[in-house]
Length: 106
Image 1 (tube, rainbow, N blue to C red):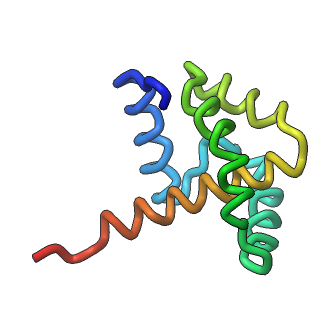
Image 2: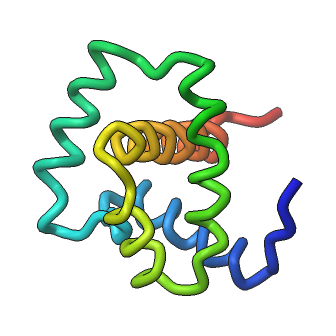
């Protein structure tokens, strides 16, 4: 279990909200084509449960980075395979948040 400060939680919520609106601040405009390719590949070969567990510590470390610039630098420092899995996991989190926000509640 990790400790996440309110500020870190606010940053993550902000990034997810921005991504839901189509602005993917973690990846920047220059990373758009790369992210697009990763998501297309992920649609054909979804991430396996064991791979998701391997990515979990990287998602935690990403969240714990104190600034957007440091989050981007962390991503840039990952090896290609891990980076792709982190991207797929991140967008899975975004998608799940979108579904949660749009569900009709009675």
